[in-house]
Structures are given as C-alpha cells and as structure tokens.
Length: 436
Ligand code: P5A
Image (cartoon, rainbow, N blue to C red; front, side, top):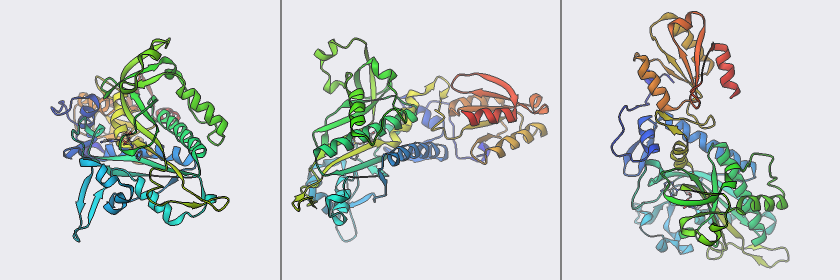
C-alpha cells in the first residue's frame, strides 16, 4: 500500500480515552477506530493483523484435525431455550426481535447451535470423535467495555466444539486442543501459560485459561519460572498419540500456575523459582460432558445398540483480543514491535526524498518486489516524521531510501526489534527480509 493514499490515520498525540499501551498504540498506529462503545472498525492495517492471527489460529486447528466451518452470528432464542441458557445468560446477551416478533439474539457463543447441527445429521458412534470450529464475530453486552479491543462488546473469537463417545475420549481431545493452543501462541510470539479456571456461564468441571503476561493484565498471576523456557513447537509432542498427549499435559500442568482466584499460598510456598505478574486471558477451554447434548436430545446409536450421549467440550481463543495482547507484550517507547508472523506489512519502504528521481525509482523497484504487500511511505513529509511513524507502526523491517544511497543502488535496512542498521544493496535487503 502507498501511505499517501491509505486509510492508516496515525496520530502524534496520545488519545485521552486510552489508558493502556496497546489501546493507545492501536489508535495511534491507525489500526482501529471505535464506532460505538466497545465496537471497533478494523482499518486496513488492523485488518491485516487480525487476518494474520486468524490464519495462524486456523492452521493449528486444521493441523489437529479440527474442521473449519462458519455458523451465523444471529441465532434463534428457541435454540437457547432447549439448553436452558436463554434465561440463565443474563444482560450480557444482546436480545433482538425480528419483524414477526420472534425472539432472536446476537450470539455470544455457539454451544447450542453446533449441538443442534450435530444432532440433525450424526446418528452413529462410528462418526465420532469430531472437532469443529469457526472464527466468527461475537457480541457480549459487557458492563464495562474497556482497554480497546481487549474487552470489547463485539469481538472476533475462534470457538471450537468437540464430540466424543465418553469421558476418556473427551480428555484426549481436551489435551489435543491444549497442545494446539500452545503451538498457536508460540507462533504468535506470545508466552501463554495454562491455568486451572472457573467455568462461569459455559459450565462443566474441567477448564483452563491461557494467560499471557503483561503489566496491564486484568488479573494477578503466580507461576513457576519453568514456564519461561517451555517449548511446544511442531515435533515436540505427537497430537495423534494419547500417551504423548498425557506426557504433554503433565509437562504443561505439573508446574505451579494460578490466577489470584485459584491461588494456593501453601503450594506456592514450595515453588523454588517464583514468578508473579499481571496476566491477560487470551484463551479458555472447557470440558462439560453432557451439559448440552443431554437436554438438547443428542443421542447416537452405540456399539451394542444402546444409545450413547456424547461428551462435549468447547474451546475459545480471543482472536481480536490477541491483537491488543501481542502489542502489550511487544512494544517500546516509540511504538509497536510486531513479531514477523503477525505484522501487517513485512516491511516499510521510506522514501526520504519523494520527487527525487533516484529515490523514487529505487522505492518503486522495492515496492514492486513485494507485489503490494509492503507499505511504501511516499508522503511528502520530513524524514523525521517518517522515521517516527515507521517505529510507531512497528513494521519488522524498514528499508530507508535516501538520495546519496539511491545513486549507488544502496538502502539502509533497519530491524525494528533490535534497532540494528546496515547499508546494503536493495537485492541484499530483500534477501535478508525473505529469510527472516
Ligand atoms: C469457549 C468457546 C467461551 O465462550 N464457548 C465457545 C467458550 N469461552 S470464553 O472464555 O467466554 O471466551 C473465549 C475467549 O474469548 C475472548 N473474549 C473476549 N475478547 C474480547 N472482548 C470480550 N468482551 C471477550 N470476552 C471473551 C477471551 O480471550 C476468552 O478467553
């Protein structure tokens, strides 16, 4: 994109309404704008980040055999009356009437809908287990929307749902999802720690929250330093082998980690290397057994002919919240420092003298090499403004083109994360960026 003709409205000043770094930086870098309380428009650069996160989340779900689908945002109240949650959910649910005076709602989650879809078409134990997911907008009429996209009213969630024949199968699925989450967060450049959690309105008796550390997090967390060095990259654990999943689950839950609600001072006293901080919940998983299948009449023909009621779980990742959470974990005084995996643009090309024939030509050559995926700062602003905006927006690489270098085909390549600068040919700069 050419910055001179882009809807990337960067701000020099800190907006008064933003109290935490990520909210401030998302507004200042022109990623989002609020359109109503807790509801945000994703401007072009923000939308690129959101899609990058969604892509990584999706790839890791598909890797464990979960099926991608898309359910509607608007749901019928009758569906929720079947599970008993229509009355139980309370004022967080946005209730709507259609022109025929029928009760509808904007979905805060999809346990009922997916259970009904499954009930209509799946008849036999032979078709289990299955995991389904979608990445879809949710609405929760939060009492206090705050911190920008961190606690919005409309937000993007990856919600997954599983169906197993029995408790033993459901536990294997639960662990498989947990492994896929650890891989996902690692690829996104954040360190997430699973912590035992309460189940709230989703229900069930086994649940973990995934917490990433940031000084502005909403809850106080206590954990063993062992979490700082754990590695979940592809190949470390086999998600198809139940014994390996048990080993993974042990590795990731045996060390102490708790939010303040679940904190146990007695056990904590025995932790050798203690770590404490604030945390942001970026994911939450639940095993709830037959809580939805039972009341909604989901029953399958079992192996010996007797009916079986599937055991379920649901698994959420806050995709839009992650944009804020990643910024909380990756920024400095000057602005955002995007991990390569989620950056809106791999590089920005800074034309320090727009209008100079040599600068313009080298910039166009660089821009063409990215086939529209880089950001070209072709504005007729002072160099200082461009440097400041490039640091603010947090592009992993800056390709700086000035008249002296351009004459020799040379650019200055800066790595945002380290500040390191080298003078190289354009070809070498492109090669270096492609390797990262
Ligand atoms: C699990 C998937 C559920 O809704 N049903 C389907 C289960 N869980 S949850 O914990 O309530 O939400 C999952 C994740 O969504 C994010 N989230 C939010 N993000 C932004 N603004 C909000 N108001 C908001 N509420 C929840 C969190 O990351 C949460 O872990």
